[in-house]
Image 1: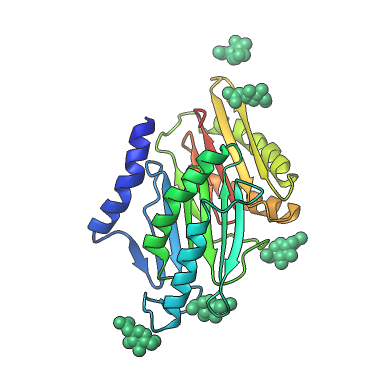
Image 2: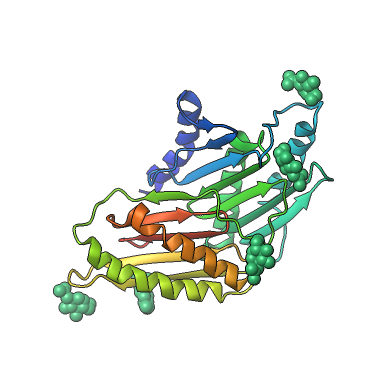
Length: 262
Ligand SMILES: *[C@@H]1O[C@H](CO)[C@@H](O)[C@H](O)[C@H]1NC(C)=O
Ligand SMILES: *[C@@H]1O[C@H](CO)[C@@H](O)[C@H](O)[C@H]1NC(C)=O
Ligand SMILES: *[C@@H]1O[C@H](CO)[C@@H](O)[C@H](O)[C@H]1NC(C)=O
Ligand SMILES: *[C@@H]1O[C@H](CO)[C@@H](O)[C@H](O)[C@H]1NC(C)=O
Ligand SMILES: *[C@@H]1O[C@H](CO)[C@@H](O)[C@H](O)[C@H]1NC(C)=O
């Protein structure tokens, strides 16, 4: 199981390059294939401007250089909090702002590994664009030419349903709704190092267990964290209302539920 996940993690980028239909490019927005089989998914855009190609004689070249330097420093940067990094590099208009957050229950060394694996993929697909994000199973790494620290960002939004339909969707909902409500409150009440909560609940009648986690970027304030999670919870009926699990991914917050521990 672990090795097949690892495999899809490394093989998928190659498939994306070989498949002319993926990544899909819509306007100046690029997005990777985000399925429950892939352990990461990514999205980039130009923050309203034109695409900036890797061209050393224009600003795109300097921006890209700053981006490379900044993101490459993340896995080894000896900061106090090993699962949350925030940093900026370069002078306007080539300033790059980046944030990297690991899931709250990930050990520091696994967190570093997640950053180390995710950064090259983000650089490969997004470095020609001013803004990018990659969601891996255990971490999120994002950057922008606009300041992002402490800023509530709902978009891009990515819903990733698990594939298994459950016959008792209404009973799942009865267990899931109060669980997410409780976990959201708990996460929002976290401090500036960690806004994370995990828990489980029993599905009525069948006794199946739902496992869930929620997390905000810890630089958000309590109200914004709570608003972000509320908005993500409201995605569940459309995303994952009839299946046994799924993820709602945004830059500022993350939620996931499954019928197995994860
Ligand atoms: C960010 O990049 C976009 C696209 O190039 C540009 O239009 C915008 O002015 C930039 N913003 C900042 C703060 O540099
Ligand atoms: C590189 O950028 C310069 C200045 O913006 C432009 O004149 C030139 O055509 C670009 N070259 C390529 C290969 O895109
Ligand atoms: C929430 O986020 C917004 C937008 O990023 C920001 O302007 C605001 O200061 C934050 N805090 C509150 C309490 O709304
Ligand atoms: C389920 O949640 C309870 C607390 O509500 C906790 O004690 C227990 O360890 C959790 N079980 C798992 C498998 O996470
Ligand atoms: C559900 O789980 C509880 C506690 O584990 C147990 O006491 C009960 O018998 C179970 N009910 C069914 C229908 O399996």
